[in-house]
Length: 293
Image 1 (cartoon, rainbow, N blue to C red):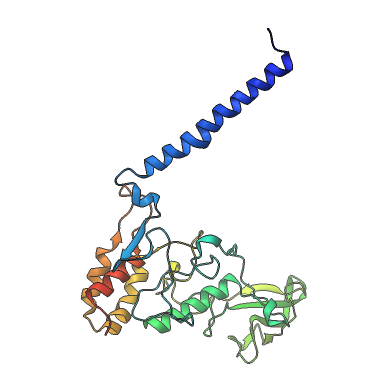
Image 2 (image 1 turned 180 degrees about the vertical axis):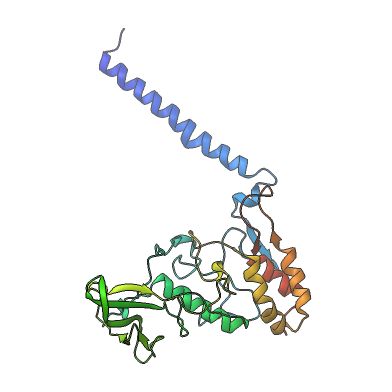
């Protein structure tokens, strides 16, 4: 007996659902799990976990901060780069700051909770702090001595042209001292909370200053990665930390430098990417070879 056309179509659809459920919902996932159990791949499938003293201390793929309970860097460890993922290196909130090169003006709101620092000021503050911590020159172009973006809002008589009539250091508020006293013959003011000097007609004017063209603090030390989870730092950032780590652990800096070299990976295939230092692996090796007293 021939089934009605509508019933035959429904049975065919049901068979297709069952077949694809078995193939894609059961067989395919089981095949991937089995592939993840292949020797050499099983560690990666489990998250490339790193263990020390019988405990899991992290992942080779996800960075972490080496700070105390108050969020201050622990001097005896190499420090990772900044992270914009959650409160820092949060794998459930992987993200970038979404701030770009044009983010140079801070927001000074009357409510401090609504204030926000520009990317430039964040970079300046980080560079200054690293310079002080590691004993190097933390100055950067377009940064003030107190660690904010050296940016002026210049008001001119004819809008875009003409002599300056008013100048505001937009990233500095009281009790700071303006990084420039006078600009084009006009006294420089401090910014006041609640004012948008760009919207009021000020021309954004970054001031380069006298910082070296090649800062001592490398770029990866003051900027977060796109994912916020990068476990590596550049060899240049590692090198400026050697003296501090060696001092805190009471060892010869040359020995710490050799340890850094051991944990530096080269370019992929000899030409892809840049050399990098895995911070967690390096710090674990430090604790093993040169335990802090």
